[in-house]
Image (cartoon, rainbow, N blue to C red; front, side):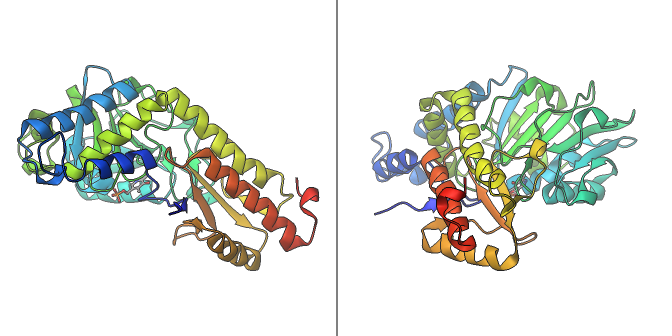
Length: 368
Ligand SMILES: *Cc1c(COP(=O)(O)O)cnc(C)c1O
């Protein structure tokens, strides 16, 4: 069997070792005579898996003591609502930086809860760049500032985060968590759906500074961070299979050498593809401005629509999966999360060069 050259945007590629390990333990985990899905979520066996996932996140991301790590359901999309429900108090405004469709969706939900303010936006320029962190205005009555650290659809990524002083900085890191080192202490809350960089869908990681968890119990229990913090994310039945797979992905990340090593490889992967775009003489055109380019989602167009259509067709025939851009913007996108190996990025770069040569009729050597 040949594994696909998987560039899916999410759910996305998982490390092969993780899948093999899970296969190996499928019928019998920890000598229980049961699969992980058949264990009680109150059993000692499951407890160990659950706590290991949380401890591994703390270790890999270097999460300080004054933060709580929660494993929740409802995807990153439910956080769009939970964040304002828990943190936007009357008299305050929730501030959003708009850098793409996901930030727009986050803002849309916050508007249903209370007052909002758009602190900066790159919408006018088709979300091709990230606003300068230094130019973002924080109002005196800000409840928090929300950013999307990596814009999965447009292929842009924050390189430097805004300084928000006393105002909590909140980041949707669904598509770049664990891809590079970040200083967690700069953030009030970080959240990420797991299905891009952490594991399968069905689990959302929330890292929240403890002082932001309030005991306000007017909220529905399931939507209150305090409920989950108090019960170690075991208030109700968690998605045990997804959390088990998350723990295996985190083991794998440690085996890779941790976050610094992963970041180094991610940079090399991204530059392998961006170099082809930059050296193509305009045959391939990157969507993002160079200073805002994402190392997780490489978005590009071809010189014209006919070339693009043929490129996607031939790429598919050559075994590449998931290279079509998001349905909302079209074009092409290569999602190269942690689990996508460098060798696959090199294969894609080679394919892009060969395609340009054959499409334009120039010998491959002339295409640098
Ligand atoms: C995929 C994605 C989401 C949506 O995640 P769900 O888990 O499907 O709700 C939100 N934000 C970003 C940045 C994403 O990439």
